[in-house]
Amino acid sequence: MNKICFTAGEKDVGTRVDKFISDNESSLTRSAVQKLIDSGLVLCNEAEIPKNYKLRIGDEIIVNVPDPVELDVAAEDISLEIVYEDDDLIVVNKPKGMVVHPAAGNYSGTLVNALLYHCKGRLSSINGVIRPGIVHRIDKNTSGLLIVAKNDDAHNMLAEQIKAHSFTREYCAIVTGRFSEKIGTVHAPIGRSKYDRKKMCVCDTNSKDAITHYEVIDEFGNFSLVRFCLETGRTHQIRVHCAYIGHAVYGDDVYGKAVKGVQGQCLHAKKIGFVHPTSGEYMEFDSELPDYFVTILSKLKKIF
Image (tube, rainbow, N blue to C red):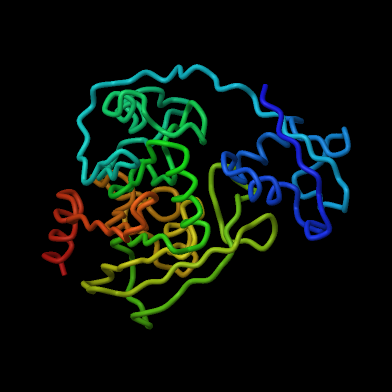
């Protein structure tokens, strides 16, 4: 167990303890700190505290970080489409249907299993043994570009860019209906549904700010091809916002309507851009729409 100690100064008064710790310890993300707090591993003046505790001057904070757990996720020789790779990071074009990291019901065949084999285990450890290297994720049935960190320094710097909204993430989707405004923004908070814990929804309580910008590229019949740019990165953000404004993503069997012969939502993470954590150079990668997406798009255009 690694013990990290802090003392709150005058400038820290009123700051949430989880933010204070993550701001002062680069090896810990805010979500990682919150998990430690929930596990009773963070003490303030020798007592457990909630993660929304606000600091007082002189507070003595002790963070107990467990020793790294030996990785028990199997490396698997699975083909990957590598768009870019260097000593710090790797950009992968994930196929539709591939789960990003192991979870109940999907302990093999995931992107993480493939990355462990490809990178020989050389991935950042910040997100633990189940999600090594994973800076951000996309859903199983969303295809497209994903960035993975090979070391903790790169992971922290990339995560900070996402937090500061300077990380470019552009998606394309086929959605239902035509838009009255061809360019716009959906600004609505997203939280977990109180009726179904597996689903997210637009709500005012226990939610986080969410901003999605959109531009209609094409229209055909009662469908639209739309470009989305994420300012924030909430779980299922595009899918939830699309359903909220009455334009569910085509094929989305969770927030919209299942379509026979279509495996989940027609949503592709097309472009990704970031400042390289070592060189400081801005890098941007664009991907072609995958075959499944082009096929569905062509069929819908022929019908209408």
